Length: 405
Image 1 (cartoon, helix red, strand yellow):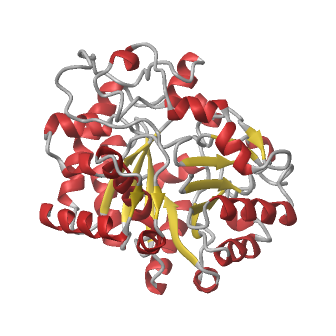
Image 2 (cartoon, one colour; image 1 turned 30 degrees about the vertical axis):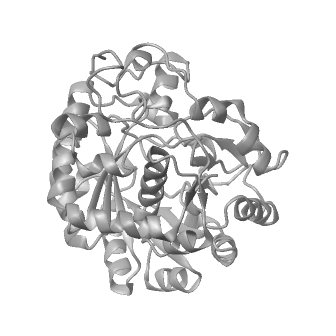
């Protein structure tokens, strides 16, 4: 079942980011958005499918929807873990207090530089950096956990170490480094080169270790992360949990403002619309989701000895080759035969059951770690041939994790 869902509840936004994957023609009016009533029906379906899922409410800028708190409080009341993805410019004391009162568990904020010039230009608004960083201070003051997202481009990739350190000093619980997938307005941008991509991922593995006891550092939309981690250290703790392997269609999907379901925000392939078809039916019968769960890769990804844990970015493959199962053009790795060398293994997608006690224990995990922990526990269960996860298994894995620090 899905454990992570991102929902673009609106296209409306007060910024005009260079890389946005949403259509820029409807930023102001919110044309085509689901009504409050229809949105609540979708929340009911999500809760019915998995009442303990994490729901990321984003946009556009989600705070611009007049029914934002009505929807988030309704979802929280259903037991869902609510996280808000925002540019941070609209956050103030009353807003953050209301977030806490309405059951929002965390906030993700976008920041792309330690200085104003690049961030404001990238986000399309003078003064955006100052407002965003002020929003971080307000979140910290009120004790609402937040994490920072940075989108990597040729102009800021050398700044990543400084952004991570700045993020830590601002009090963030995690720093996620997103690698651009050229969709939407991002199609007009030039991504970093494959060589720069590999260099940056190599640095992030070292940064993850450096900040391990301070703040979580992770590469996102970067499935090659595990391959590089294995190359640097075959016994790396990163390989024993979930980090950056793609979960689109296996444990994750995205909902558009119009109610369309896609495997991820950067993969525009529509697998159904929630105003026409039930979520459970879409999740279980979609041929696209089935392909992602039992992939038959082509090109270098087909022959790669890391295909089971990496598989390349399907969104990049689709954008570059018009083939969901094509090879990822941003990977520099030349495959060896699958039967040799790679010690990193994975299992085909199988549903893993969680006992009530184990699910309750998972709910206590901080929001920014929940997805990683869930995927890591399920990977362990598959490796051991287990069909059910109990609280004893979680306790054992926590004990092992403590010994690796």
